[in-house]
Length: 114
Image (cartoon, rainbow, N blue to C red; front, side, top):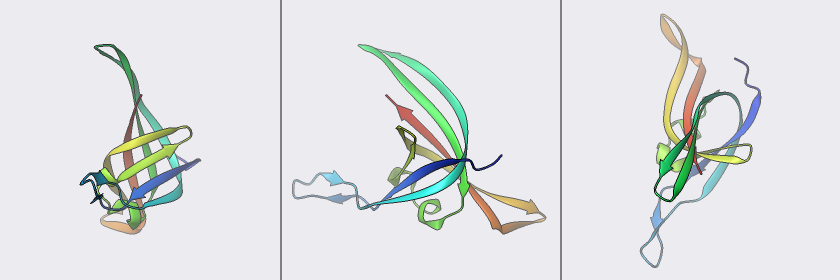
């Protein structure tokens, strides 16, 4: 599966508290990467007062410690016009007996709700 889509992985710094004691995100670091994308699902969820659309996607991106070692709470993926919350990440290596750490990837799973 070729990496044919340009996405941006937004990495935020740790949450801090402002003068009103509210939690605010830390500094934003956008990281543009090439990815292969797989659409997982799109569904309408009926709720009181209307419906909600939820889109789930997976991307495989090259390993980068800036996002691979960051908690998913501090990550977002921008793919085209949509911003996805990262719900899970899995590190993938090519293996033939021993892991090949030169060929590492990260599978990112995201969800967009509107």
